[in-house]
Image 1 (tube, helix red, strand yellow):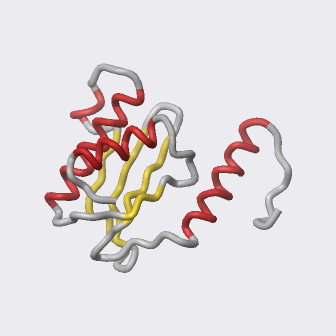
Image 2 (cartoon, rainbow, N blue to C red; image 1 turned 30 degrees about the vertical axis):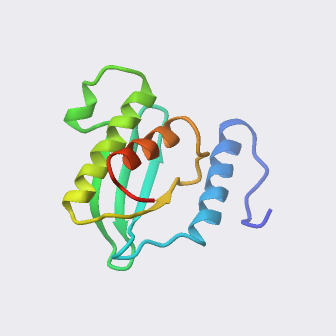
Length: 127
């Protein structure tokens, strides 16, 4: 393997695969002041989205399922991801961000990740 990872089994193999994909993605993606990076971090229970300017190293906007407006919401995890996508887009637009570069964080673009991205697009954030 190119990144010096051991061959693992089970969940450790999944985490290593996600890490490899994330390294591969981050080689090409970089957030600037004009187009910051929309980073999605996913766990089994929660999802976090941040808009980051990599040049200055600042987080411009963030939202997660741990926010009080999303935490008590009904629905499955995909529905909560949609709410997080709309919320982070609203906060990013309030911070003056119109377009972002999407960083899926090594996760596959399906399910909750796709739901968050689609909701952010519908709220007016350009990818």
